[in-house]
Image 1 (cartoon, rainbow, N blue to C red):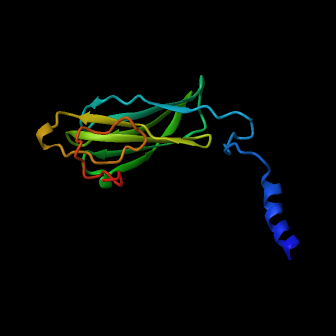
Image 2: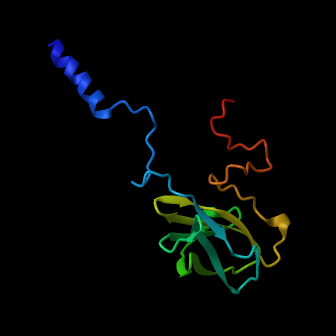
Image 3: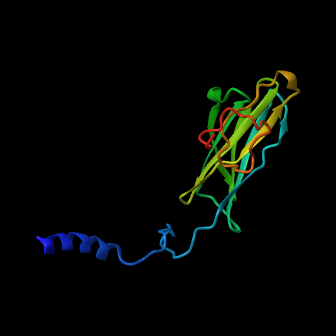
Length: 165
């Protein structure tokens, strides 16, 4: 009986080996994949009722990425639930475009949801359409989890989840 129990313990140890290093998906090349960089090239101020190009330039290292999946998510400040998802199409050399028309003055936000080579990034940009009355603009409470340096200006934010308070 003891031999049987010992073999139950020994077999998994033999199978896992003695590697104490954490497992990292190196895509079978033995090196970490280079970071995917998405540069939003959409203007930060646009006209109302004109077709606007939403533009993202996708690179990895020095190389333009032509095999990415890019979706632009656009919403008016404070109204993320009413946003639009627009598929970006490869234009040339890592540049993905989609068209969008802002139909009224307002402050809008856009995520460029980008998946390329098993990596996902989603930079966010504010876009001002026309001449909005800034006193009537709703505050955007959407989560920008990809931008860890942006903690907002409201330090007494009620959205502090589980910070030991």
